[in-house]
Image 1 (tube, rainbow, N blue to C red):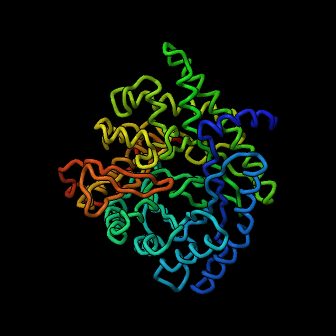
Image 2 (cartoon, one colour):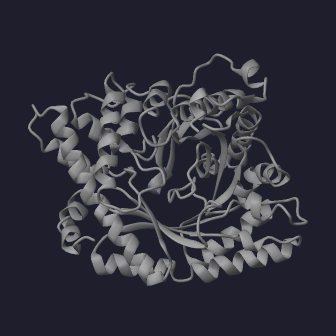
Image 3 (cartoon, rainbow, N blue to C red):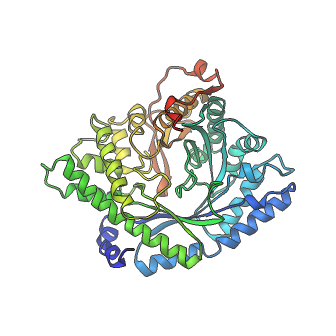
Length: 453
């Protein structure tokens, strides 16, 4: 148990350092919505989501008011639709995305995740139909997010799926070319995807999850950056780690409080707190600035990967002591468009896709919200996904790719999204071809470390 007064001591973090709860996400199982009739499936999905989540937004707003803690997003995740809709008589799965979107609008949440498929070892009929529908689904809905898991440490990498996702991302970009290829910002390709992630666009409600659950994602890069800046300039890395651990403990306590309050008020089980440091485009709310506070002139220079490894480790160590149940992704996010410091680093020429890939070996997720030239080939995008999937597979960690080939834009241009998506500088992509590599298909076998039994 913990004393709520300990949480309230962090009020200055909220007012001065951009501390917030990034999301309360309600996970809802739709497994009992399956039917051989599309109309029955649609009605069951809509009715169940609106029944369970009818008070989610109102409850989140009440908690904000009662505790003075900003809660930026209220979201829903559902069972992968490829599973729920597979037995229906409908082949156009984009119709189910519209039902999800309508339900999300009805209850007032910001996003709904779960237009998803798990294909790390192969496809079922439902998987194929869902993936085919992703471009239409994401270009014709406002709040629906999609994810696809193409690799695990146990199964290896499904390279047929990796190849297909390159084409899917290109099609998503083309369908929303007049809006900065925004559909791509709602699509994540994973390796080792977790079933309880509260963050979009990758959230879904896993088949091992309960009927309904509340998961919370915390934030607070600004708090951590200020704590590091407050140290003696001569402080060694041990002191930096201790400072980040103590700060992460306080941040996670806030998440624990909100999660338990939401669970109690909604009469829904508390699932997990995700420790991830989720940046925003706001000045002072940047993971890159934490790394620079450790002594780097600019994020992306030599030493950045080591600094990020220290940060990620310290956040986890501090966070796990503050909550009984930690899950999701839990680490430091490095989305380029959503982090003011990352944007500055790209513009300064300090940060490249290759350096970001190296950084993903030691942080929470992967290549996130990266905009690239619109003429980048599907094969190159697939190869980028394959590289990230390999990092996840070999290191038994979650990795992901959320990449945006913006039609009509070239290296050095800027695409503006606004809100939490921020603005993205178009980054350079290696010009040499991966076409013959990607065209081989098949499955890259699981590594030896997968044999742990």
